[in-house]
Amino acid sequence: MNNISVLYSEEELALSVKKLGAEITEEYKGKKLLVVCVLKGAFVFTADLVRSIDNDMQIAFITAKSYVCTSSTGNVSISGDHDFMGLDLREWDVLLVEDILDTGRTLCELKKKFASMGAPSVKIAVMLDKPSRRVADITPDFKCYEIEDKFVVGCGLDYDERYRNLPFIGIVSE
Ligand code: IMP
Ligand code: MG
Image 1: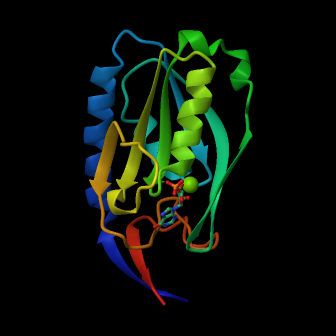
Image 2: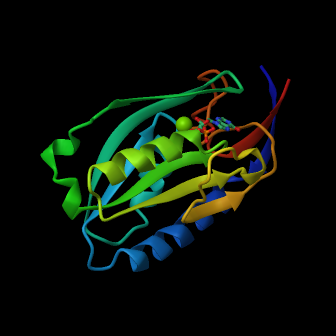
């Protein structure tokens, strides 16, 4: 078992997610909102966030993978629900929901994909932003916290598939 120290407690995070949900509610008033949860990591954040957004919406899922253990492989593979329940993406404002924005490769690929399907807007909501690691030209439109270059786990984030179930965000030390 690795040592894990708490970076953001369950209570802190819950408040931050509520605030973000209120911001997103304002942004998408009167629009057709399609929330796209980027699996696996964003499943916890998405579940919490959508319950804090007071708008009509639909929710879709897509799988993207770029990490093995604690290293970004540089290759992003995308799989999952590609026909988005038959929706015509030209009618939907897309909000990509991701656990963490790191190098930015994953969200850059996903943003391009949804823009190419004709979505009038494609925005990004993340629980955590690690700007010091960025290689792609991308910034989050909505975020809970900006963090230093530390490897974090919990609330969906894993270390080699472990710790996704932790109710807080923690920093792993070997
Ligand atoms: P990006 O394409 O480099 O921005 O990668 C984003 C993905 O890398 C996230 O969806 C996470 O799955 C993973 N990732 C990046 N940093 C961390 C971390 O500190 N802990 C756990 N997963 C991470
Ligand atoms: Mg992920």
